[in-house]
Image (cartoon, rainbow, N blue to C red; front, side, top):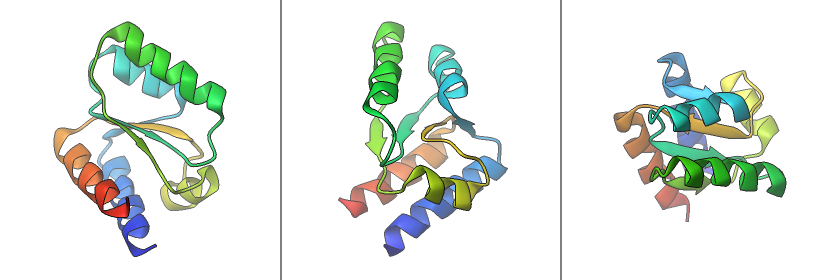
Length: 106
């Protein structure tokens, strides 16, 4: 649970730095423009929304790592102040830190 809190804290820092695209449309725009460095899905995001976003990644022919968070949409909302189940991290440094935190959760 501690690592999950660290991951949410890191997402909070990235949000305050303006390096997140939150929600379906913003994340899709980030992927299309090539800014997305990592794609995050909340634990309780619908299968349809996941599939839709993965199709967008495939169509854009970009390689974006996908991380399935152990946090729910409500937990993300509480931590970041924005209700979203799909998030892209648009900064290489934040993306690397978030990927390393997510790997320690596995």
